[in-house]
Amino acid sequence: MRKIVVISLLAVFGVYLLEVLFKLDFGHQFFLNGVKDFYLTNSPEKLNVANVVTSIVVNFRGFDTLGEVTVLFLATTAMSSILYKERHQLGERAVLFSSSRIVMTGSKLLFPAIILLGVYVFIHGHLTPGGGFQGGVIIATGFLLMLLAYKDYRVSHMALSIVESSAGIIFASVGLLGMLNGGTFLENFLPTGTMNNLLSGGVIPIIYIAVGLKVGAELTGLIYTALNEKD
Amino acid sequence: MIIYVILLFFLLILMIGAAIYSIVQRDLLYAVIGTGVISLILSVLFLLLQAPDVALTEAAIGVALTTIIFIITIRNTVRFEKDSDQPIKPVSK
Image 1 (cartoon, rainbow over the protein chains, first blue to last red):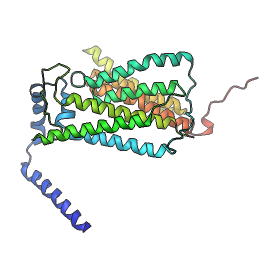
Image 2: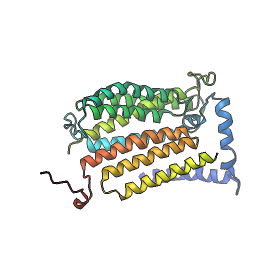
Image 3: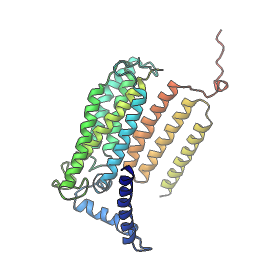
């Protein structure tokens, strides 16, 4: 039974591979000619997105982004499963450097600004350089600063996993809605608005908010488990 | 234009210098700081080469997160690979 399943899957794969190979003419530069002009003309005209990189990453090649997010999720899960031994008894957080009052006050002042910068980067992902991944990492560094400065600063694992899971569900379901609408995965189905407005680009702001929250929660959890690891 | 090229080469030479420093350094903590400096200069280079998206990623991941994960690792393991690498402490009287 198992062999039959494997053979049929391989046969389907082989048929598609052969079809692609036979459709390409020998020596024809199919990959070099078409793609970049398509991206450069379509992302300002059809999607009204100023940042072409963003439109490629989350719209034309959104399936790759899903793969990236999955890889990050798996890596974080693996690291947590190694380091996070006892579920409710975290070890005493080993202090890298004992922080003075100046460091503590400065971190408390800087923390909202860093979070705001991260949120700005991923909300304006379709207008300015940056995007969900970068914004999420900036948010994680903000939490890292607080974790380093305050010895008893706690992050709720429950809240982190809720934010992470719901952001992942939003990402995948928006992508599937694009498929249900008769297009490809993550294809745009909302009105695109006018270029350079905050509410433009169709699904791209929604995707980037989801990706930013997901990456921020994942990396914060990773740093938190690593810092609380017992010797 | 020539100033741009000179700046580019200056940053590249700084990067190579930081890389050599982090290879030959016996103290692993300083070596990790060296790799952080490499990432910092690399992000400036990406900005000069008009790739601001990649520059943001490099600055956030390479400078902040990777460095701190390595520092946590060093704290949990060893700072010197051999005991003979440790600097000789001055004898206090």
